Image (cartoon, rainbow, N blue to C red; front, side, top):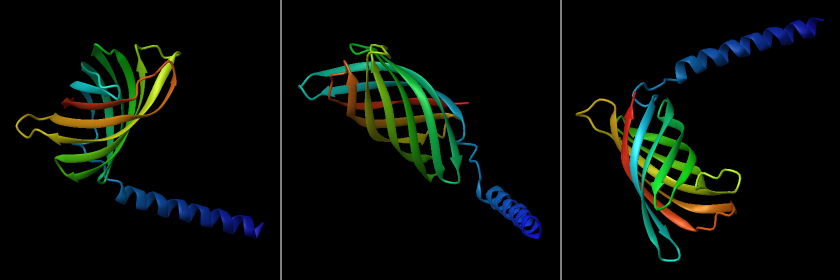
Amino acid sequence: MRHIIEAAICAVITTAVILATATVAVRADTTLSRCYVETSVAGTFLRAGDREATGSIGGGCDFAVNDLVLGAGIRGDFGDIQSGAAFAKLGYALNPHLTAYGLAAWVVPDFKIRDAGSLHLGAGAETSVQAIKGLSLFAEASAAAAKSGTATRDDVLIRGGIRFRF
């Protein structure tokens, strides 16, 4: 019985120390920890030599812990190529106005979720526009790393756009 009580006391003390440390160490940056809507233009460069351009709309949310930024979102591309994508990003705030991030996206051609998809891996950067609160510019590049179903395009995607954080 004595060992159980000692173990319980140790567990309570350890939990209290962890929570106190986490409260001090986790500083949510309110300028980066926001949701956003975005619009962008993307150029798709196919390995077969073709090029196609699309316009996009989307949205997502980011959360910052100290200088580490975690985010996720969705977007739809409309034009010659129509597709939907869900993406995740992991980044680092280089300064209060510039973030660099790695990107992983699952892209579904023609919005046919059951039929196909491709995994895109890439990187991006986002910088805030200081003259307009909440507005930022971003650029991303990604390449198809894996595909399934009827997704046959081996493509490289370059995207640039604006985000408005609220």
